[in-house]
Image (cartoon, rainbow, N blue to C red; front, side):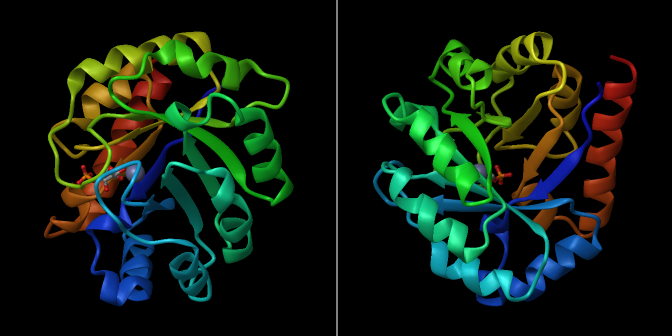
Length: 226
Ligand code: DX5
Ligand code: ZN
């Protein structure tokens, strides 16, 4: 079964003071999801937004809010993020080795879609149990930069992880995050990624709609030929 393209502008690169209108602008440009980077200043050396901002944004949009939790204690965020209206809840495998089963179960019970993310230095094998478990995650996010900041350089060596995952799990949602844009999308799409996060390349473009449609086409073309 082929997977579908989901293009997810990272709102980390938006004007946070105008989040609702930035979200609307991206949806009008053809975005499928809005990627929301939640950082706690501990798991990563940056602090961004949390459940109160998701709750405020939810009042202005029905869009799928693809929340990426770069936090040390993801379990503590499940309830507030669920109440706030998050759609996807992606936690990091590095901080969930002992409680991922409970996490996945709670995320689902709050009506969110569970995903697992891994840092560049984390081996891909670490997510296998979470994809193959009885109560599995529904997406794997492969970080293609060190988590924490937008605007970093894409790491092509992460594509081995994407290829390995796609071979093993033909219908899994595989997301890539960091440094994606017109010059790197082909590498990610041909490796098998179908959910594409892009911050600076979309928000920095004169015509974000063109960047979004170019990335969608690359994913679709590669899915067709696979
Ligand atoms: C980095 C975040 C990314 C970031 C991507 O820790 O997870 O979502 O916003 O930004 P770009 O596309 O600029 O690399
Ligand atoms: Zn992210």
